[in-house]
Image (cartoon, rainbow, N blue to C red; front, top):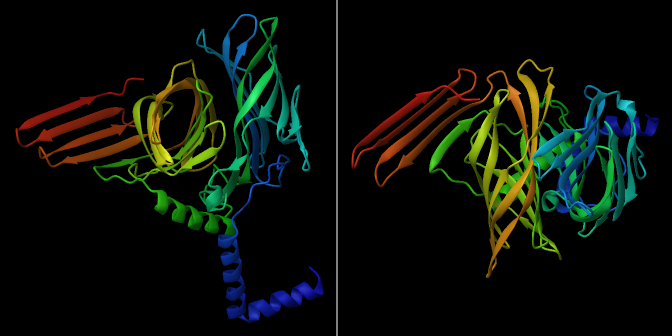
Length: 435
């Protein structure tokens, strides 16, 4: 540090009021001028964790077979390590090919600060908005895909500054909701050309899965303040019931969907210990513009237990904003499950459960439009020593009564009770969890 800077720091420390005044000015400036996305921001950043991801639904030209592809190039400095997440789903035969390579040395992933130029073993990705080329190769399977953006890039929660907190860390999330896709696939010794539609995202930031309370920063505090302001304006809170569970904000629900009419959605939810307070975002791309929805509620219609946690496999989402969306997303393929043990004294593991499926529902903005299509669903859960538990109490006025449900994966028990006063009704159920 130079002598002039050192004197300036000493002067600030000797005048606390002046120091606080400058901090307040910086905060006001940050709130007034939110983070603005840069379409060409495809290069790497100096951060703890970063990934580049592509999802696609494709159909081969000769045999008319339908596939779903999800792939991510990722590095993280916490372990440290680099990873290639590469999964191919055969949608016709309900087959899954796990083609990823995990926990490689961090320098296995080569990346450039100034442009998108990635390489990991035999796989690579390069380009600049709006054109990208992805080459994925592992275990004898090769995908070379070219994508061209048909929508503009957006930052998640852009209107709230574009900074998303995780514990005391933060990240930025850039996505393109729809891209045209074409290329070729080599599978089981046969090479075929394909066409389809794709989604692109680039995420980077400083946060920890092992210790979510690390990496506190001024950006995190501002991020929470802006998001809470945005959430309060767009909240969708219901207290017809009270549900406390181990689902925590270090996890997420994620989905990208392609509708038959050419529209797309990008959906994300951060679970909270009190389930009646949802934190969600949803973007609808209607072929011309991307519409943000903020007043969102969701419900888990069905699910399964996996390695100490509950994975929703059918989700109902209701979103209001510029019109209203009412959607059901349902997994219907063989899933890909990725687990990573954590070094925390409290957090046991991270589970990533991804599976393509179907989506259906409607959109109403003065005219009701029925929607059907395909979706890619990804559920991430951070599992604690207590594993999955849930207590739900629902109250009723007419007729007066109460419902009580208790789950505990750790104690392998499900208990439910239903009570109604007029007319009188009492029922209870107890069993072990079926895996």
